[in-house]
Length: 69
Image 1 (cartoon, rainbow, N blue to C red):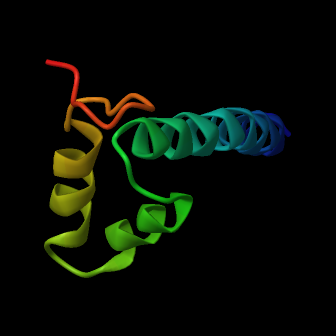
Image 2 (image 1 turned 30 degrees about the vertical axis):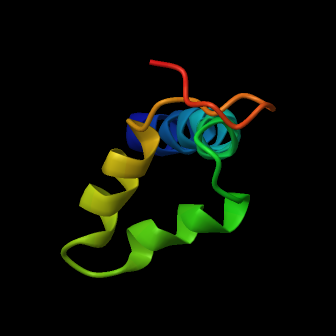
């Protein structure tokens, strides 16, 4: 009954937020001067997600190579 509907809605919400979340993360990594493949660093046990947060917090690097503070 109602539990199946909740499961379907929760799955749709997860999928609807996963794709834009990945896109935002890849864009932020590119702005910080990293390639999109750095997104996989979060798969490293224990320290991967911390390392990814640090990468996402780095300042942007414009095309001229000088970091924006």
